[in-house]
Image 1 (cartoon, rainbow, N blue to C red):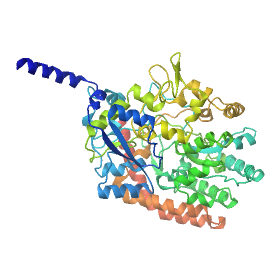
Image 2: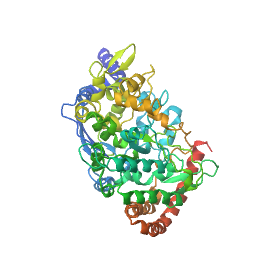
Image 3: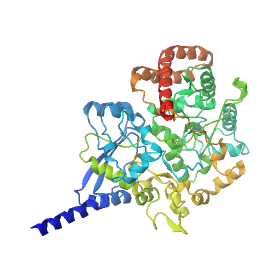
Image 4: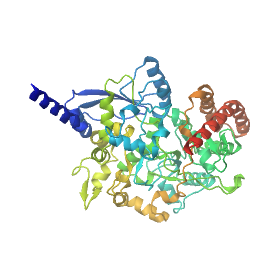
Amino acid sequence: MKKFLAVMMALAMIVALLPAALADEALEPITVTVFRGDPGDQPTDDNKIYKLIEDEFGIKFEIEFLAGDLDETLGLKIANEDYPDLFDGGNSAELIENAGALIDLLPYITEEGTPNLYKHIYTDNRVQQLLHDGKLYIIPNYGINYNGKIDNAPNGPMFFIQKQVIAWNNYKVPTTLNEYFDLLDAFIAENPTNKDGNPYIGFAFPVEDWRRFGLINPVQHLMGRPNDGEVIIDVTTDDYATTTFINQSYAKDYYKKLNEEFNKGTISRDTFVWNYDQYIAALSTGTVLGAFDQGWNHGTAMDALKTAKMDENTFLGIPLVYDESYGYGKIEEHYVNGTVMNKDRGFGISVNCQYPERMINLFENLLSDKWQKILQWGIEGEDYYVEDGRMLMTKEQYDQRSDAAWKKANMALTIWESAPKKQGLMDDGNAWAPGDQAEMYFGMMTEYDVNFLENCGVRVPGDFFDKTLELAPYGEAWQIDKAPIDIDYQDFLTIQDQTLPQVIMADPAEFDAKWDAFVEAINPSCEVYSNFMHEEVLKLVKQALGE
């Protein structure tokens, strides 16, 4: 009997020491429900990466994508406590955090049990920036770089312009708002339609739901500040003076310019009623010449144009500021900020999930080098090859990554986009993102893009921007949770959403009156919001400085 017990104890110890992935193989297969706070495409039933995940971890996914308004959808789920296992609340994740929909991940993450996750969030004490009252609900889906950050092409907020317009302008790239619209207007005057006879739209921007940043955020960038959401912060003084910009005179200058361009026909009336899918569909036709957007927000449209071999219709991102005629002096652009974690964005595990340990184990394993290569590069020998230690792709392999149908069958985009991931460089010097690999970035450029950049006199698109700005001690203010002033904040947003389109579309003779009415209506919520954000910024600064 003693011998039997000794054998059983030894077996138990061996099982306890098995890698987590092997232990999972003995578990019953499960179907994990997933919600993504963004529109998306269902993967094919035979998606090869999801099949690998199912084979190794016994996990299949049932995915729900956003259809309709994000806040309304989340509100309904909260009211009904209808929580999926993996819950990505998109740009309104604070709603599900504050509603108690997510579990605290911190007790599940240890240096011994989950070394990949532990290193991911505890290096440089990152975890302190991610906690809410001592709890960790979401591990950032982007913004944690290994061995440095790669900035060949900024992917955040900026103005965009079709490359064919720059080529038409003898490759001179505008640097100010006036130069930009003068160029768009001149191009349309000479080229009102494309070769198929479809009229060009001069300028567009996303406006639906949280993507209102396309309508709101340009003002801060034109004034030389990086993305702090809806406020401008003076980082040159210890007081960090914080104010909303939407009710300032320098905001009026921007919307007056949009009013002028709307009345010229450069901006389509449809812009203000497009939902996100319609906006992407318009960009995908190649008839939209300019936009303000975040680079990651319209990637599917650019992929569609690349797949259709319409390289001249793809966008170049550029940093614009007000020129000196506006009376603000010479403004230095600061579009590209230092590395910031995408706080409160990505998957949380809901309180309804019956197997949180398996979800943590999944994240732990997917964050391994092996699985990060699979999720980001694919299958060696099929999606990429290795030569002299360098991970490479043929042109065919690289080009297929822009094909929507191929991606639905060969990439686990839904899981990869919302899960914790490695960015930057591998320990061996390869890039985690194929597009960041030096040989890939330059070697797989289309002939059109190679010639385009050469004619512009730059090496990479990032060369159009000033060097990366040092990140302020508070990070980026858009990450601050506005729940304590929710009523005033919603008023602040609603007035902008409802009134700014009317201001832009007004008869020029009525613009000043409509602008004044807008400012009068929004000033009370602006005051509450500015004061709140200033207090929160100062708290974050003290926390960062250890005070």
